[in-house]
Length: 225
Image 1 (cartoon, rainbow, N blue to C red):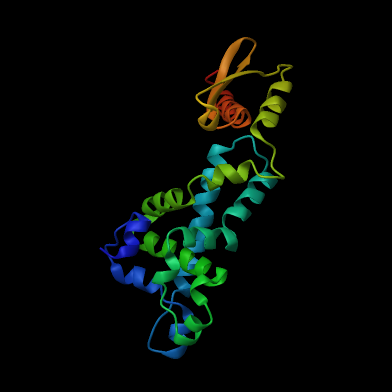
Image 2: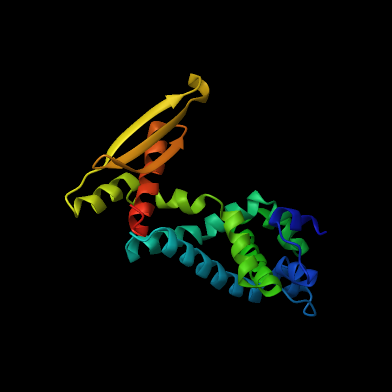
């Protein structure tokens, strides 16, 4: 197994695709007989956009188009791609020309981001959209939820209040903490007209209430309550 495959959680049927995704354009510039990862980068960018868009559309049905676009933009941005690449040690696997290597290319955001997109493109060609989706979900982890709660995006409690206000209803929260002070865990619940519609836990009361509100929004959107 190629070492990087452990970090990716994916084993290539066509290892040459992975090698190509890791070949920087400085290599082909020095040796015109070599190919580089720019075409795979182009493909991977489109796959990443599609997978992230699909997830946002399904998980945040109450978000307006502008909100979804703002979150997606952050998730597929160069800094985020570079952060994901660093998290799996991608830089050490990239093939660079000597001059690019000496200039610190392995830790440049642009090179890391491009290589990350190229790897996504390679997985898509090797295993299809399902495997590419699994890869993106694994590597992006909680970043989607974190961006949804970032400044500029309404938090779950606010959105739940707005949803209920349309029908003249309001949420009622309750919570309690357990465990020692340095490891306390909070559990929160939210009810509407005396009926619990969401429950969540977290390291703080605020975090637990946000999760309870998120669960409530999902329940209300699906019509289960």
